[in-house]
Length: 399
Image (cartoon, rainbow, N blue to C red; front, side):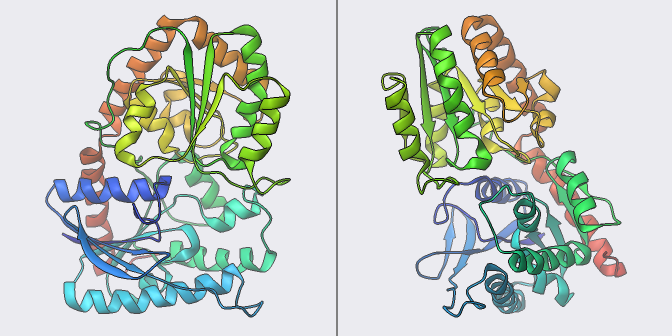
């Protein structure tokens, strides 16, 4: 098949966030099983059109206008998806795609889906309008949420097949958009050759990693609040926050707030911050720690969880979102309630004091990744989904 993946996020120009990482793994997995893959993505700098690791990646730019109503996110993304639609038509005339893989987030594929020129699939990562309506982002304007919800909903209604990485999110978006059609659950893919266990670490000091954007939704503040409790119970413990700084509801910088908290609580010797690293360097970061903490307030299917599992690390996640599905309801990692620093501290203490439990959970986690999340296996499942979308397109079936 000749496949086009459409999404603003594709590494490295737009970073290595979860959606960008998914698109990368999917493209590489589809190529590995014999498909042709192009990507239509975004760049903050100049437009480009080049082959990257055998994948053609065409990047476009788009700027916000200054008038207030044109500076809204809703108006911006309405204009942006129309721009995407025009560029797609030119690419399609040249390449004749069999299927276009679109994302729910911000409705980028709306014009492509509405055109009816090609079979389309839509993958739910986490609709922007749903995330914003749940106050999981910082404050957004109501009219932006309303317009983007309209675009995202009609994209979902018009695509020829829908998919999602977790049942939790599928249930939520079905209710939020009032959908009356099935959503196929296909987990995130991961490269299990690159993300793999390395040499075992000494049991002391116990090293704990938080990896991800330092934003409220990911819960770095919950871990920060747990650290004084932990250091009293496990003196020989070290924490690393690995990720890009983000604003909080009370400050333009989580890191600045955290450093003040660390200084006041005399934690300078046991807490460190590191800037984000590229995908190729992440296995080294996971293998340098004993425990990986994913204290998200909500996350559909965090790649940090999967990457740590693939590296055989003991993971502490929350019961919110899709994490329980990935951690096998607690059989491949510990689960705690969200928003609970004391429960998080207790879970980390348990793992810090029981090396055998850490190893047991790490082995179970690695086995689960090998069985369910290998990117070539996920690519084959996605390929079958594309075939269904093509059949639905020929029969004129959508939402």
